[in-house]
Length: 133
Length: 159
Image (tube, rainbow over all chains, first blue to last red; front, side, top):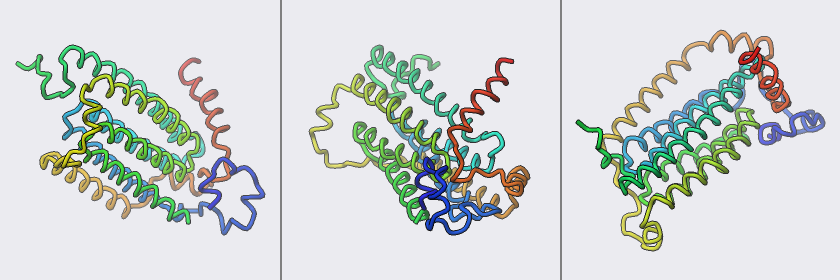
């Protein structure tokens, strides 16, 4: 359990070879107790909740929250698959890029929301219809 | 034990995300979003991505969410009134169109995951498992990530 909960102390070998360890942590063939399917199902749930938020909410900030939920579920998928790629750590590197990109996108989006609020006195996207033909 | 912890984190993430969606009060929903992000960081730990989990906590909880709360406070005149009054209906009624769409998409995804389960693993994963190139809990992830960022990815951009 220690190996899973505290990956930071993973390179301390007396923990890894002590009595905590029963068999290799990840068996050959990926038959760990927590399989890839667990991660996939959890991230599918989170993604659909985010999708529902984006469609249903009438508040621009909540729509941004929904987008963040969807990005987070995508990052969970990247990380779960990246466990099997030790050669170039593709999943984790791309997850870090995705986190930074999401943070930048949220900063821009919130600036736009504040300006829209100053101009229209509302942040309900249904009421901002200047471009409607 | 770790399976129990994984399920605890997963249930915490999904239920708090559901609460974020269904609460009417935006301030409460934003503060519940903290819990979702923290438990997602806990789930990242189970995928042996410690540095990504720390980055998630630092960037999202420390930056993005504070920014969102600021935007909410700056754009809502009735925040204090909303927080003080205890309205009769705490939850908003789900709109059935969005619910149908989200549930249909979830069904498609679950069908895809089932189909994917019945197939064999992709070839690159089988190769990596066979050659032992799978991230182990005893690996030093941060050192490897630093080497990858400084060495490999930099040469991809500026050579």
